[in-house]
Length: 281
Image 1 (cartoon, rainbow, N blue to C red):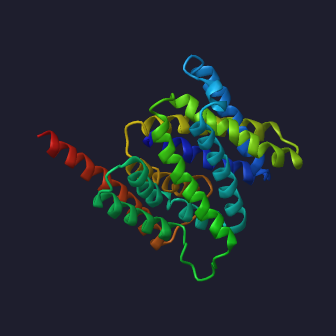
Image 2 (image 1 turned 90 degrees about the vertical axis):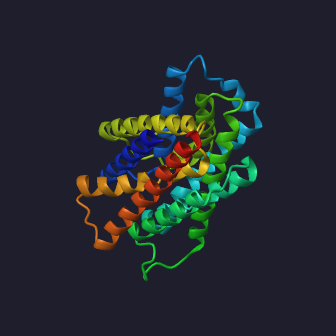
């Protein structure tokens, strides 16, 4: 799960670099991500991958369509609301995922997970300035909330799919159906693509494919609530990368938010390990 957060952080920073070069077709960026993901899966997992299941397994279809819609909703909210506010709203899927997992998977909803989630979400609110007086809720905030709910559903359905499907097949569902959903708007207004942008798109796609494979494999053993909480290291990594590579500056309350995110994750993981050790003894 930690490996996946590093890959997702690298992907987001690469996409920001692509945007800095003047390339703003986010649909094509998404398509590149899905295409590279399918190529990586077909190359590395050619024996384990079952592409025929993508058309026969209803849960795989639901996972793919939900993942593709989630990407669309997230991009829509980012373009209309802003990356910071959307990131905070979308990461509320940590809470929704824990509640859905308790309902659908009968996972135990431990108080330590709820405390860590509240702490981490509070930190992310500070880090992204979500409570700024100049920001007003719009219908696109609703799109971001829906994206968070979709992300929570995807986390739960991944846990269910591990009973019958290989991780590669589960990841390929998002790539396959996401490509179908995003390809039409991507080619509708296709700008010229330079060699540098193409190279960055390919590297970003590889990072996302590796991150998705690591995340999907991790959910085989990690409960949804704890796995989702670890994923909140990604926005922290993006914030740090923005400071290093894009010379962004952060205020004291933003640094306090980063500290809260780390504290929330550490509290949950360390208490989980302590509980396991006590049980074993």
